[in-house]
Length: 213
Ligand SMILES: [Zn+2]
Image (cartoon, rainbow, N blue to C red; front, top):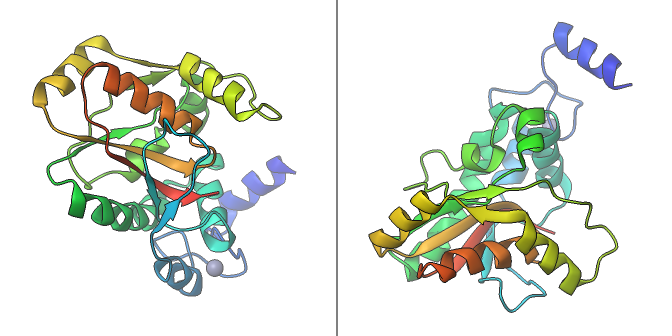
């Protein structure tokens, strides 16, 4: 099936990443689906963990946004980055009203995910949004399906670490850091990322995500 889809992509103009019934414009979406995406408004995501900073997401993980995000991540459709980046920018605008002068710290992909996609999808969607500081790295992550929130949090802590030199440089800036992720669910990953930065004395007042599940 996947082979058929890949072969189709070679010969036909790319279909809209969401409805697939219309050809995509340069954004990877047809005009109607692009309008759907732009009609979304930022929302405050609710997370199960106290350790996670407050998260503002570009919209709910559903419909056009979910389709576009999946195609961007799973099929490496990089042309969707600007459309998804607009949602990140709106979420960021909500946060920076309260926190001026912040830098952005993207949640990293595992090495395997990055290799499979061919790019770092979160950092790529942040292009042009601000001062990007990729200080975190991800270790291979076991499947977290079926785990309790506490177990998820432990997994997330074990899977993230910082590049010491970069973390020290970030701490020396004495500027607040806003974490950036693609989808926020339980907040376990963002809580773990925040703990690492806070451990180095970095203030982490908030996070942003493209979508909230
Ligand atoms: Zn469409």
